[in-house]
Image (cartoon, rainbow, N blue to C red; front, side):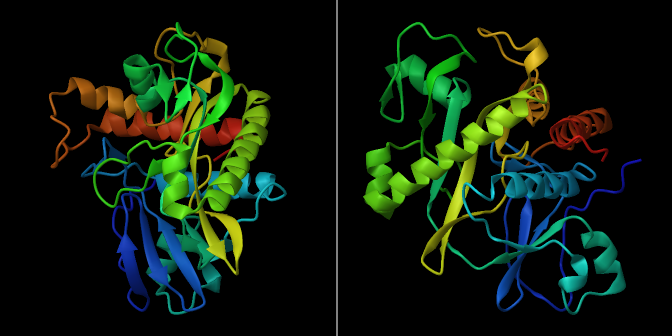
Length: 296
């Protein structure tokens, strides 16, 4: 049975640094505390009601991938044990269980590292206009959701508000340095390849995903969430068919509902009906269970 959605956190004795679309960040001194709430956003707008347990599912999925990919790139994870946080009230301890990561304080690179194995989303729109994605010239005649001839790295800007913008690798190099972007490209493609190969054995296609990186003690590490249904497109391999939109284990169900409910994609977003909330939760649970082989 789903618990009640946690859409806000305000810890009494710990300083909040900021609130993103989904995560709240707190300062623990040497480390940061990331709390993954049950907020859900679509079209860069946060919905008024959350999806129960979503934060817990996302946290568990990220922890799973951090473990699987730790030999490809070091990550920022220090602990996921709520008892390692000093100064919580008993209620806060219960609320935060399974939805926190205590992490290293890294200096974040201001570039989103997007990797695409299939052509969909903003990449498909760019391709239709220009025949290219982020400077990668592609063969003509590709279909929607088709597997790309090779995996491509397509960075984007990190927008504080509004939409991230696709940029070329050359532009990304101008922002963070050519050596850095070359390293991030290698890590991004290597992690995606390892994850996609693994997911395929579980009947899931990872069409694309995005990673974030930071510098910690002069070393590049992976930060934030990893390969979750919020940052990736997961498709069931059994029903995959190029040339059309795919079933998915991510927010696509929510996006499709919002496309048809008459909302103009600007705040405030509409309250989501219960059936949409439950169906979305079901998609997240399915993704977790299929990938990890564990019951949620």
